[in-house]
Length: 407
Length: 160
Ligand SMILES: [Fe+2]
Image (cartoon, rainbow over all chains, first blue to last red; front, side):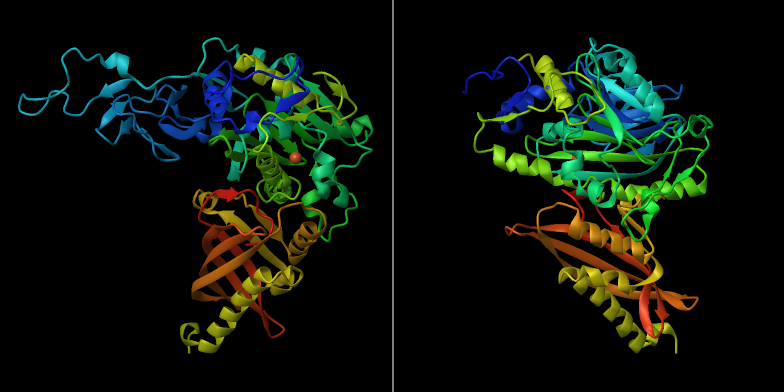
């Protein structure tokens, strides 16, 4: 038995490599983070528009069913039968009047209450369910659910504050900024990351690396050093927003909310995927927002998406991209979104590197669990106006991690 | 004679598909856009999105220039661990004539080998093609690679 884990030092400017490789810490994260006081993204209202619609997903290692019931209410339950523990839903998505575990035909309503047990009264007066069996005590484990602007979140913990308080007013405003209308799913990607989930969580908060690792930016002129922007953090540091914006245009061009096309010179034969129709009422070109521990809300030009991070063991993760448009997108805007999506996703020209760089840390970290990575860029866990050359949001992530883990 | 019995057409189409695979596997990627018509479409899409009738692709090149840009990007900008593909092609069928060209489908398996030697079955799936003749040569008017799995291991940079 190894010594109990202790955080090295007072602040969050260094992290031991053990956090990426230690199976015991991974198990504690499942309990204290994913089942702890956090809101975890589980899907979109647009994915389950009708009564009976369901989808399956994960919060950490826990399999989860998300449903819309007959009353139109959104529910989330652990996807595990109260009888023998089988997955109740083994499909990705579907529509059903009730949920039936096929193993022994135990049936639940769409809110997770146990409604039927096969051969409850036995056969020919023999066998059957014990007389004192309490159906009410054997439903699916229900989670607390909140929806915000079409996003569905769930939490295992009673103590998790309401979602708006969880991320705070400033960061709620940046979700409001992107998800301005009813959403439409344009498709999904799943990317298998050969690394601990936290390496990807850190990567998203690491505004420092963007123009260094993702050379497409500099090579083809997506983000230029002259562009404005900054980093915002929630008060507790757990959640963040990093954004860049174009040089200001005359106000009357922005205020009219007119969708316009920005043509610029890129060193590409076909700059179609670099066009940007201003649709959100400002000049922000890139906006990456995290909700601790496992969600990213992304706007890159007209490519909108949410990314859900699912740990799959100590050295493997799955990243589910749900790529979005708005319900009322005209065909030309949808076509533009599909083209701009060449920049993001597992094959994304400006995002693919994030798929491999975590694996490189993972492989190098393994040999020296007590050595440390350092985060010396910028100061503290504070917002940074005008500069993205800071690791403040990464330190904020570790602040959240330490708070949940009690270390 | 129908296209079903036209062995010389079949072998010509077979050759185009083999040439496509060899250009990738032999790392002559710069030649790849030349197998497409100027306005040719190249897409890689997951079977999940395809079956759900969702329009999103992993790679979407509308025109050979967009494919050429992807090749330029992977040569000059993108960062990834060196690796090669081996395409295994099979079950090619000419499904029908269409206008001046043909609709064709075939199967593929791509084995990925990393520089340090580890190998994996990276992708399997189906090509759905529209092939036309331009100035005597067959070209892809459209090539859609539908990958069976929705999971992409690490990243997808070299076209499938
Ligand atoms: Fe990145």
